Image (cartoon, rainbow, N blue to C red; front, side, top):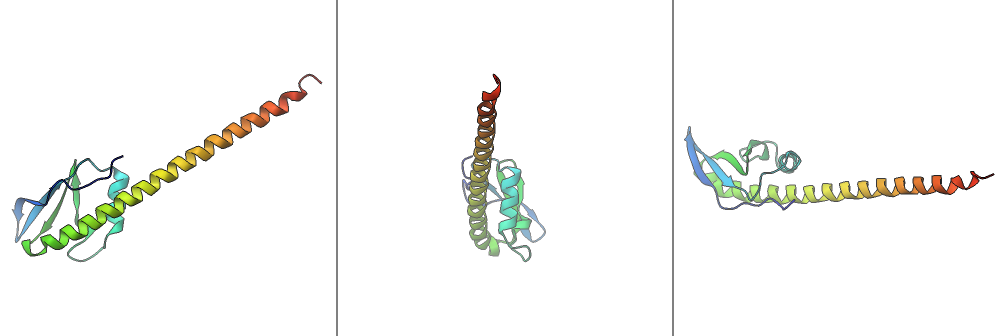
Length: 121
């Protein structure tokens, strides 16, 4: 999977109370695992929180006053990087696990073939 990245800065999608709902297009639709990594990489409370980011198809959204948008973007970029890194590590671990399982199965099959040498006794 190609790393997720922002395609542009935030665009105000609509006004909600005294804040705007901001939308940021992404280069691809994040997977459920990636979104979980994103949410887990950020703070859990406060005005700027990874838990307050919503995902829809290939975009993310958040609610904020104009005064906090720049800070949101700094945090979002950090969370995107952390989610990409965690996704890459998880994918490498899955490949390593598959390689180990394949090697183990091949070794077991070879031992079985080797043990078959007694068939003609």
